[in-house]
Amino acid sequence: MTSAYIIVDAEVTNPAQYEDYKKWSTAAIQAHGAEICARGGKVEVLEGDWAPQRLVVLKFPSVEAARKFNDSPEYGKARASRQGAAVMRMVLVEGL
Image (cartoon, rainbow, N blue to C red; front, side, top):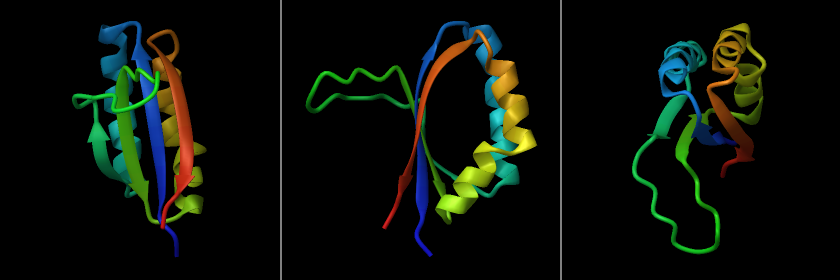
């Protein structure tokens, strides 16, 4: 089975409200057995013009598990709590 990663670039626009999203997304991450590889640490751009604000990298055992997390009611609750608190860019990447 091939692992998978969800990579998020979040531009937080309402830090207080974003705290609720972090709470609910953490619960969803735990419920779906994802590993948090990076979450909001310092970012250093090495090449190009990409300037991410807040990066999150989640590892899942498979693409299917990552999709199940993204489509889950648990993450849906987190997503709803985030409305108006951040601009999200999220991709699913198949691992090795």
